Length: 416
Image 1: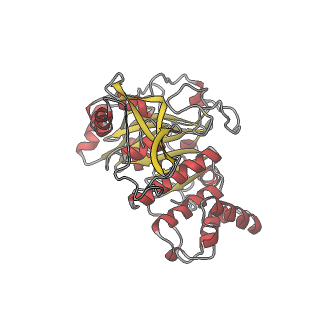
Image 2: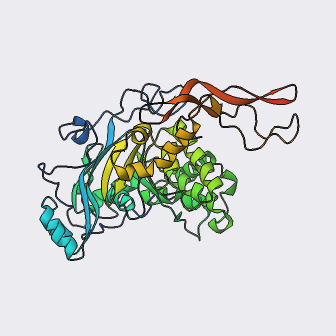
Image 3: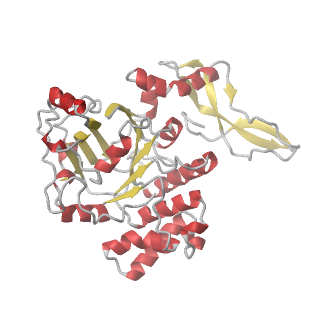
């Protein structure tokens, strides 16, 4: 996971001094616009309120804040994508994407439509997860957001600024100051220390050396690697390298983090650990994150809202519970089938997800007091998903050397 320090590169599709693609004409419809959204929504084109720190009323994840499936005052839109296309073909800008026959002819000649008419909005402080199978276009989509891959058509509005219309110098400044990207394969420089890797984006930005070091050390402390500052990447495990990538992005204090399957190449336990770390950092920093994954459990665990992609299209956008209870089509239904089946199995008499094994000996429980497990109501809710009991959660308790179960803290109602 690395912040894109190479923001000084020119555009992928044109010369460094060239102009970006013209904004798509307003008449082009979108087959995947979010429910309830429209082109006339002021949040799409207009600059929202300043980047005030989120509080308990904004609906962000955290203790004392409304849950992600509860009603909350919406935050201002930071990123808006309108009718975005990416066609891999020679002279792709000459293809009229609003003419289905022209697109079909291009595909017949060998063109690949990687992103097709994608529209969505991301609000400040939320984790927006884009999920899909390999080849669905999700990685191409996230690279289009900062024009590492040049879009064929459409608009990308960041805090009211049109990214697709930026000149090369504007685009370089945008990449270095407003957005940071985290990749799956770390992207660390092997000949530089951990501290130098974290400070590299600040160096490219031209920050003074003392500022670079101070911010890099602060970021390493946030991810628990301050003692490794003088080591080289070869001495680190895969999970530690990914933490360095997270620290590099955090050190730049960018408004938007783009994370392209950052945990998919890690072992399950390490992946879970880093998911916990990301949620902890999000509680503290309230960053705006676009997170790419093909793992449904990861998407449900991390995402405030999810977008499901298929063959370049966004087929559904919604909160995790909305997507599980009301899948838009058979493709989404197959995606969430395992979660729905697990919920159906849990339905019945009141039960808790108890540990697989009993404590090894009296007074030595395998699970610590305070660890919670979800209790499920007997009757499934509408849509077949069992409804968790709002105030009934079981946790291990210790009484006179015996392991027992009693009321516990509230946990996620979708994943353990």
